[in-house]
Structure formats: structure tokens, C-alpha cells
View (cartoon, rainbow, N blue to C red):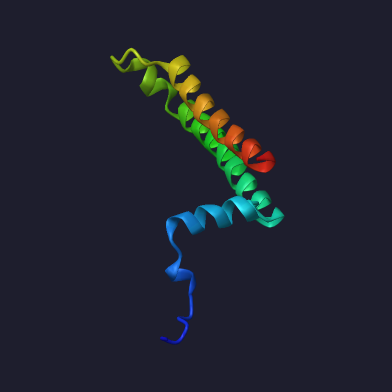
Length: 95
């Protein structure tokens, strides 16, 4: 009879992994949640502030340009991206 083989985490089969995850569950630590949500919320606030500041700085050039995307649509784009990032941060904090 051969000697028993030592098992390592690398020897797990996909079924074993699924069973182990189902049994243990997965939950982030509080520090991970706080860091992740703060990063997303901070990025959303930063992108809003700097985006609007840059738009105000370039307003004259934008209004004179022949493009159909004037200040309103650009402000909406910046606000949408910022709101999405803040929303991701809030979602990250609670899920």
C-alpha cells in the first residue's frame, strides 16, 4: 500500500472549492469595506470638483467651438460619472 499523499491547497478540485466557499461564506473585513468605499466616494467627489473646475476654466472655448456638446451636456456627464462613483462607494460600504 502506498504512503498517504499529503494534500495541499493546490490539489483541490473545483467541486471542493465550491463546497468550501458555500460552507464558509465570504465576507470582507471592516477595514477592506471602509477603504474601498472611501476610495470610491473620494474619487467621485474629486472627479466632480476637478471636472467642474476645468469646465468653468474652459467655458469660453467650449461655447465658441462648433461642437453640439456645450456646457450642459458636459456638466451632466461629469455629474453622472461622479454620482456613479459615489454610488459604488455607498454600495461597497453596505454589501
